[in-house]
Every structure is written in C-alpha cells, then in structure tokens.
Image 1 (cartoon, helix red, strand yellow):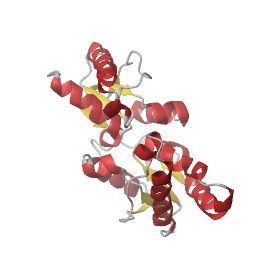
Image 2 (image 1 turned 45 degrees about the vertical axis):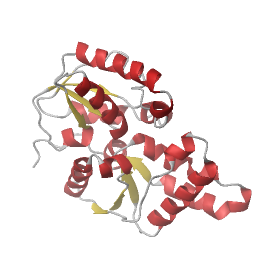
Image 3 (image 1 turned 90 degrees about the horizontal axis):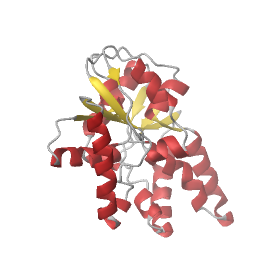
Image 4 (image 1 turned 30 degrees about the vertical axis):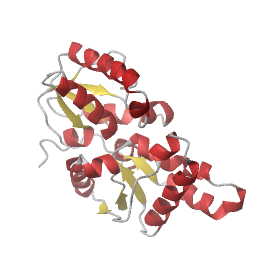
Amino acid sequence: MKVSLFITCLADVFYPEVGKDVVEILEDLGCEVDFPKNQTCCGQPAFNSGYLKETKTAAKHMIETFSSIESDYVVAPSGSCVLMVHEFHTLFAEDEVEWKKKAEYLACKTYEFTQFLVEVLGKEDLGAELHKKATVHTSCHMSRIMGIKEPPQKLLRCVKGLEVVPLSHNYDCCGFGGTFSVKMPEISEQMVDEKVEHIMETEADILIGMDCSCLMNIKGRLHRKGYPVEVKHIAQVLNEGRK
C-alpha cells in the first residue's frame, strides 16, 4: 500500500529523527512511503486561537497537497495534528460542499502512527529491543478526543527488554496545549512541574510519548531541573534494535 507521511511542524523542525524512524518502520512493513513536500502547518495553532479564516486557508492548502498524491493512507507521528485534519470539515459551510467532501475524504484515510500500525496493518511486535525502564505520557488530543489508547500499549508490550511502569495521573495535560503555554505560561509551568514530579517518582530511565509537542515541553522542564531522564517518541523506541 502507498502511504503519505504527514510529518507535522514540530517533527519536521525539531525532531526529524522521528520522521526517519517512522519511514523506516513503515517501509520495513511493506509500505511505499512518499513525502508531499508542499505540506505546511495543519492550522491547529490558529484554530485553537479562534482565527478560523486563517485556519481555513491552511486547511485548504493541506487538503490540496495530500489530494494531489494518490496514496491509500496518510500517517502522522502526532495525535493532535491528526485530530486537526479530522476537524477540517467543520470549517466549511454549506456553500463549500466540495471542500467539505474533500476534507472528509482526507480525514477517512488519515491515521496516527501507532493507530495505523495496530488497526490498519495489524502489527504489534515489530522486533524492537530496548533494555530500559520506561514510563509513558498519553497526550490529551490523542487519548481523550480520538480515543487512541490501546495501540501504543500493545506495541510497547512487545518491545523486548522494555519495562514499562505506570505514570501517576498520566492523563493529566503536560501544560503545553499549543498556544495555551504561550498565553498562560505561569499555569503551564505549574502543570508541567506536576508532570515532571510524577515522572521522577517512577524512577524510569525514559519517558515515552506519542506527540512531539508534549515531549518538547516535558523535556525542556526536565532539562531545566537537571533530571537525567531520556525523552523519546514511540517511533524511536519501536525502531530500536531493528537496525
């Protein structure tokens, strides 16, 4: 099958290694992966801030970009960005029926990375091996709104040597929340401090997450506090020991 990689802004700019791991895993599983170079931000920051006109412009560009590629699926290493694609259709009124249909079609074939592996490809054991103690942060958009909870757990259970310990209050937001962390930094700081406190309680070597925005926020706080905890996207973990 042919898969288009929706890299997302943060992965593209700050975590390109995550994109590389996603591509390597998908190709090893028999997927033909392409990368639409014209893709840009999905418009989520503008959407969350109430700038619907600007969001619609970004949405139309993304719809056109991925519609120009005849792929079976679109896969992204971010639940929050995938959710935004699934929200595109809400931007278009009755006088924009064609755009709404295009948005709905794109949403139907757009999946979060772990969801795609488990629910579409039917894969859980990828042959990964990592002898470390880890804990997992579940991002809000992915787990609460999209309901993607089981796929990451199933995949991590199959990583040889990986000990996954529960994270207290793991469903609490890390405080990033897109523009929330910029508009309300004091509250955001307190939220990520609570998250970091619970992470340190686990005595884990690694924090694993499915969304680069959450990981960037938590990693920054861990670093500022001098805590030696590795922070990895799940794609990086699932590609360990396979190379």
